[in-house]
Length: 56
Image 1 (tube, rainbow, N blue to C red):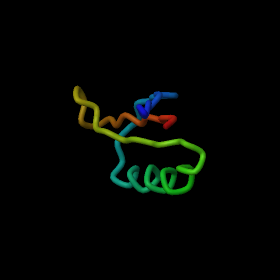
Image 2: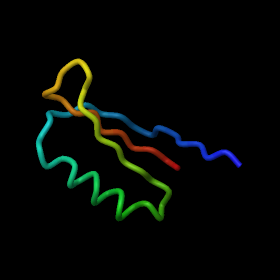
Image 3: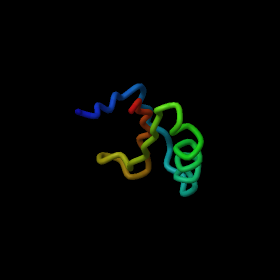
Image 4: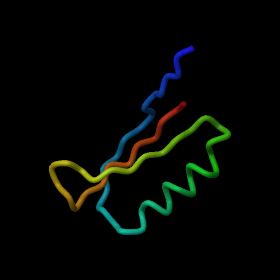
């Protein structure tokens, strides 16, 4: 069986040091609804972060 991860939405926001706390809370709260959240620094601009919502 193959697990597919579908990207539902991606948005670029200004980076803040506490953004990971929001992502962690979302992942802990909504994993039962087959949702997963990711956060990564923008490769081209380290002052921006890319927030992604996935369906698992």
